[in-house]
Amino acid sequence: KGIRVDRTMGHHYDMVSGNKNLITMGEENRITTNDSVSTIGGKLTMTASKDIRIRSEAGSVTVDSGAGITTISGNHVLIDAKNVLVLKGAKIVRDDASAEDKVTGNRLDETQGGHNISAGSVGIKTPGGSKKFVGQNDETIVTGAKKTVVGGASIPFGDVNVIQTTAT
Image (tube, rainbow, N blue to C red; front, side, top):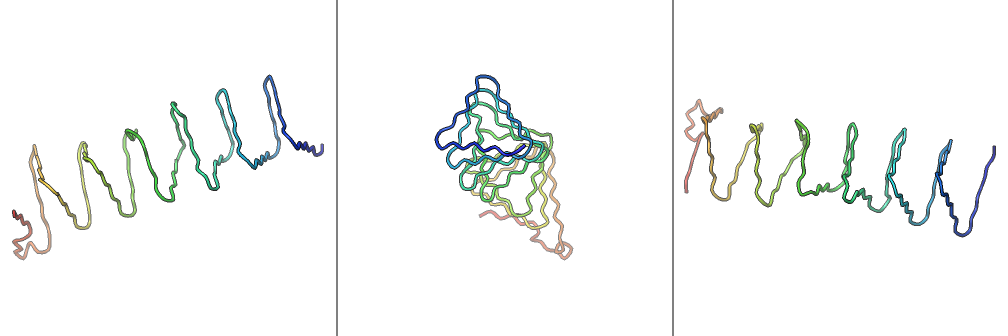
């Protein structure tokens, strides 16, 4: 029982030619005032019974596996970007049977090239108005039947401009 203090004013090396086990029954605190580098020739496993935090006060945090696969997994995964979230990849794949995107505010999808949607069926619903602006030709091909239903308060009063098509 007691306290042990090792103070080294110059360099300090621990060299072990076999296995090294360090068991701490209390907290372990490490303070490094300059860079810290760990080089591991095999795999690295970190296991904690509580939270693990990787944090940089002012710099960046990079998780990179080089040529391998980087996996982030958990029951719920939260990515919290305070400004912009960028997903880079030649192809971004959602690997699930059913997906849902929920946005509580406005959403803008901007594609500088072509934008194709392929689905078993497509449904669009809005409680407000809808506008479609096409800068060039607009073509619709229907291989089955087409049904248009327009309902509104002005129809029973003989509004003849309910459906209006104009060519200029």
